[in-house]
Length: 106
Image 1 (cartoon, rainbow, N blue to C red):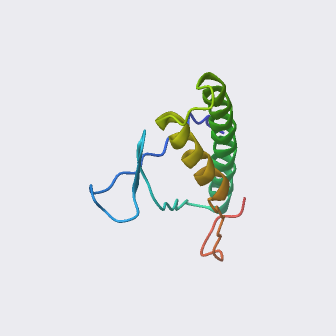
Image 2: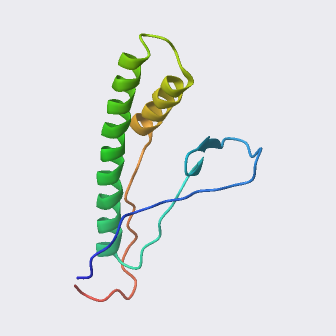
């Protein structure tokens, strides 16, 4: 099985588009991944969940550090980190697999 590198999603859209919030990598929005088979879909889902969890831990640690260093002042960094944490904690993610259609047995 070939090794995969880092998983990077970049979403972008039109400035002023309703519902898009700017982030460091582009814009937040809805996303869908279409895979060639069920095994690939499951691997991608697991990879995204793992990276999502690691990002949530990173954001929480950054938020704790920012709160300690700011001496309880509400800086823009703290506001951004709290918004990012809320997004990471409340986003729904699902794996949807359709019925087989001429799929090769694995």
